[in-house]
Length: 126
Image 1 (cartoon, helix red, strand yellow):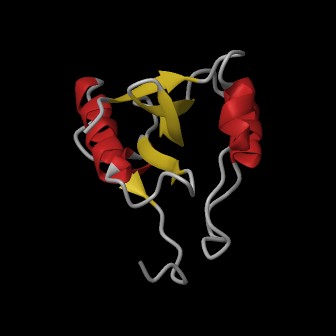
Image 2 (spheres, one colour):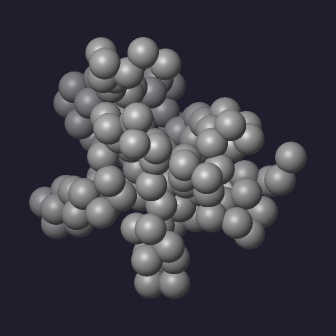
């Protein structure tokens, strides 16, 4: 399998990240446009808390993730969140999601998190 890396969103990859999408039967996943707007808003209020990343398999863009990362938050349950996570509809079923999740967990551990939270949608039966 290709090497999975998390790379910051830049002017060079932003449009490609915005072009990623999930399947029509996955309506519970927010668009990357909405996610990046929320990241900008969150970072305007609390710089560095929202951390969006492009997910690459070698040099191929395959997905997007975003973290809420605030080690100073008084509530331990609000410090570290996997806020968004998606693999492009054309890249699903190839093992990229699991490999990316492994890299995401490494990122949090490397940066001092001892637990990670995520939300789920009850309608998402998978």
